[in-house]
Image (cartoon, rainbow, N blue to C red; front, side, top):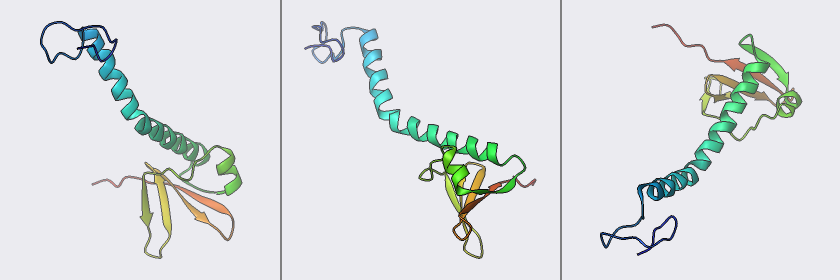
Length: 118
């Protein structure tokens, strides 16, 4: 049988898949990287979105024109959760920073979620 990583002939047990521990580690690390690439890319986008919201909203609440948010590179497709108020407003959050789109003003209300003390 041939090594799954380097394709050298393996010796020993008949069901052996790798010629060495190094080849086994390289194979598994590469497989893990491929499987995790989508998750890593999504997390990068979420972190970038959060940093943009944090930079634009240092005081905890502000209204910004949609153009500013989008020019900063904000990706509206990625957020961690949605909070709906009693009156039906949907705030989308990237972790602890959120936004609400006001279509009448073509602007976003940016907010920061503060943890309540127990």
